[in-house]
Image 1 (tube, rainbow, N blue to C red):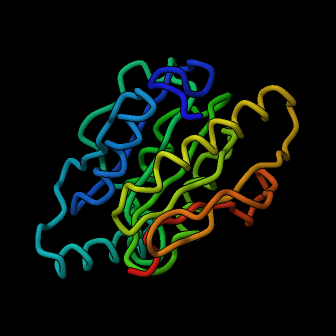
Image 2: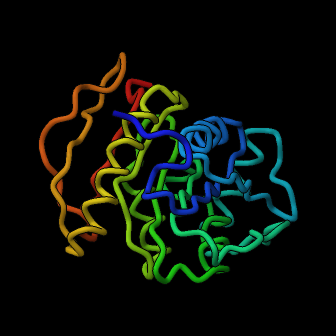
Length: 212
């Protein structure tokens, strides 16, 4: 059964931090916040990205190729008080936007649990989820989520990772058995199978709407 908002992750404080350009990632972030009762923080650059798609892709590519760290307009108040941090973004040029690196390097993630999520057009979901994990090495991590914009799989994913979190914190081991919802055009499939959490370069992930 699904928990109620505020009861996930044993009632620990949840932050949902996200960068969104077109609004797709924001929709997923808002759904995560609604379900978990977490606080939303939109990562916004000091210098806004172009609203024109082609111009934005050119800026994004230049930032990636120069390993840039775009400045962020605001900071998270009381970041140290959060225990679980959802960190999400769109896939830009096969990976996370460079502003996600700025955010990850601006805070101390020691002792926190990071949950990566992303939105994407067709591919590079796993690479982007792995990038978010790589940027937060001091944290523990739970199964990530990828979506082409749909929020229909978010509830089942959060129920899954809530169980993972409970098992990780009860057992204290780095590997946990849990269900994985396989990709489905019409919605998430019944949970089945097992995953090992968390192995570097082998991200378990739930995906939704992958038919694009």
